[in-house]
Image (cartoon, rainbow, N blue to C red; front, top):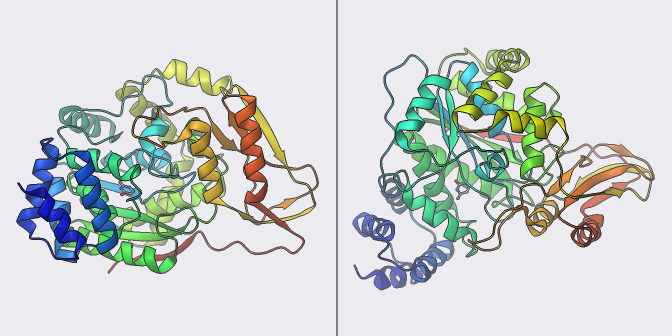
Length: 436
Ligand code: URA
């Protein structure tokens, strides 16, 4: 195929035929298009956009670039949640086992870190032995027996997203509404779901900086999901501040376990329960959101999702003994340093973008496709907006590979926290719900 003409057409703002988009995806997956040309096309899309029809064609071509999941008939609905990406966003980790305990099947195909946002797969790979690369048969078998699985795209399943996702990450082409829509929905449609809830983040550390842009993305995804037969909703959630008190792969796994143990930070718990409540309402397992919320809360507090988490880990190859030893012994990076408040007051802002950039630069994220992640680095004990601090209180702890990196991170983090004499009510975590 003459791919150069597709790059030029999009560069000049022309609309592409569905057949051409499909041919591009097939050729890309077959390795017939070099990365430099694909990157040029992605950049053209980033600037020129895609129409609704082009976005739908790209999504379906990406979904069909490999096999899709086929599940046996079962009374348990197939559901999933996916986030557009945030800092400290570990919701999927406690949510998947909770949903399994609430009588759902959850075939969660997740992603790696993108830009400064963390990735579910990178977090899970900080667990000894845990494998995110499962074949289709094992995904279906694990979902049927355990109720949930969290894994990645493979050479057989949504391979187009596997390649394009990694390329977008390092070519500045992530924050594009059609590319995010196609990336997320190609994976979710390959799961053959009954219901899907999306976490569309807005704010300083999100790919959509404003609520308006996030709403545009949410409407695009909700419309396409529903058109494709999946009951789809989106929640618009705030990403000006990090979610929870920890950012960084291993530190976030620990916080997810805290949430399953009933000790999790309130904002993480609120999102986990709210997403579960929506899925219960979407599938008719709850008559209202309030009823769904009560069911989700009882489910989480029963302690069963914590055991389900262990079951999922074991089914995906984790060495549970070693994992629990790491948890019990408080495994951490070689250097841990505290950032302390230099005054009394109220935390009015904790800048999620700076936190995400520092985590990435400590080695917790990628700057190139070849970057090897350091799972142990990051931050915890992050002070949240609304909190009172006094001189010498901890604003956060930096976990680093060595003293020099810890020192550099502490310097950069000083301006990430704003302490004021006047208290300010933090903005709500959930701004609105899109159900079109
Ligand atoms: N998550 C995805 O799976 N894809 C994106 O493009 C952004 C977030």
